[in-house]
Length: 405
Image (cartoon, rainbow, N blue to C red; front, side):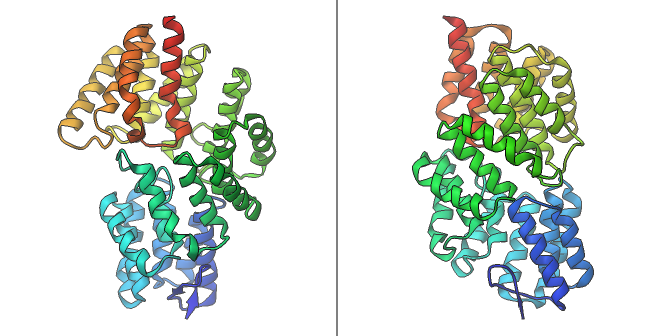
């Protein structure tokens, strides 16, 4: 019997398949390198290896190829019938993940971890702010995230992957002092990891070390290849640091060179939300309206997110408000209201408050903007994303207050 990198048994007919699978798993956990390429090698070496198909499903999902991901996940579950109990449970979790059944996947994962706490690749979809808990829309999701991750610490020791997810969960719960050394250990152990680097950028940002973050990212980012799924988002962090300096020329230079569609393997949700957030926050900070960029982002949003979805809903509202398209914004508000009434708007009514606040801000109605955004603040955690990303709301409110005065 062969094993994965965490000592768990894997059903594979050859060592070559096992090696390729371990590489695919590492690339998924580190957000570095082409995970799909490695998973394809594993499947080619052993077409009947269930974990290879499940890993391939997650790699396809990371590329937003949902139909192919579902096919691969189904293959993994079917083949796992003759594999170990751990592999069968793992495959079932992945099937739920790729089909968007967040609550079902999370319920299965919680049971699975009681037996197999070191199944990192099963935990990974639930371990981040864009994951099963992060996109749940629940008010207490940050504490829920930490409650899932923290009890697993004794099973991982000083493992770099666990340190990065544990540190990020701590950071989102205002435990910056605890998070900093843990995440620093992760990036020291795996300096090539896109995930560890991203979490480290968050720690530096949240602890007010903006100059250090700017210097560190400027040095680190050129070595991160565009096939890493966090390519756009880590460059966005650098652009955001330039924004905080009101260096709009450097900010847009970074964005134009690294954060547009077609420049990397980054997910459409990052390309869209990062671009809109940067544009909107720059406008709130006093920059000129970037019409051409916003029009391109609007098209991107309509292409990939035609219906309201968590996190993208707020950013689509910001894009339409910035462009001053009152008709499209009113239509989108009706879509959001319909989704809310149908119980399918994950973040709830806070999205409508933010839309109204952004609309009022774009129109120069500062008092209305303040009222709407103040109403949103207590529930803004529900919209998804990290604390650094959700500052789009608080920064807009601060800008409206300043303009009102």
